[in-house]
Image 1 (cartoon, helix red, strand yellow):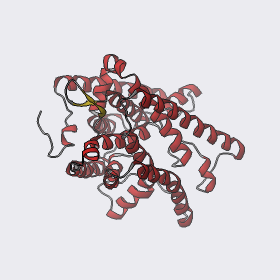
Image 2: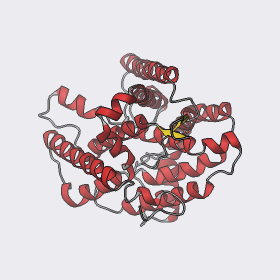
Image 3: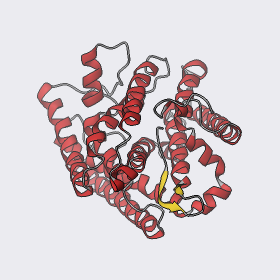
Length: 363
């Protein structure tokens, strides 16, 4: 996805900020996880419980990892502006936001049966722009308020309107009002809810991510958040039962994409844990997992390409979980290998070149 993975500490040998390749590797994992979720199906009557659990691991986690990495990338991209007072790269940010919004709306018209996340990314880029120079305590406070109030407002509006939100992403063929309320409230990644992990990513991007102490804190606190939120949800559901409908009892839910705080905390904790591990093991990542780094650098190209593959080659399948495993594995291997070759031979991906302003259409 759109990103600029630059370290917080300088590379003394080059005199330039060093790229954090652990973030690229984490982004590739998010791509693979999202691809697997989008391929589906996640459950079949003849499947073993273990097979279902394994295939369900990225559900509700890969997309949160994507969103947090987007916030981190936006924070790193504007680090110099915050620290030295030079103008913000607002033209690049606005260009990326507009490009992502219209790309997402257009791609939603394909027959891939996927809720395209790009439109929501673009809107969140607009939302984050006024906060890029705001003090960290303010961004943290807003992220916390959003985490608590977003799900409450989301549930309240459904109760007041006696309407169950449909989770459908907007497309370019929809009326303007449908695009607006689907993006902000009723769609698959409503900005009302997903603002919290995006702002959280902006806060993380302000940390000294290249320092080992910071990386260890990410690992520890990511694990704590994931385990505590998941454990609390499981305990409450065990006591009060699985919530149904959209009453206030939904607040105890930790299910993927329930839009509830405990899911957001648990999923974000898992994302922070993974980011911390990849950053801490960056030397190993660079020398052993360079193919993941390449895939992370071509994340937007891979994301868009997988939608076309789903629409043109996969749908209406797969029909079984085994087929889902096979298709997901084949697509992941193909895209990762192709991205690695492309990066080594050419450099920036074809769509990544469009992200800067003015667009870089040539090498």
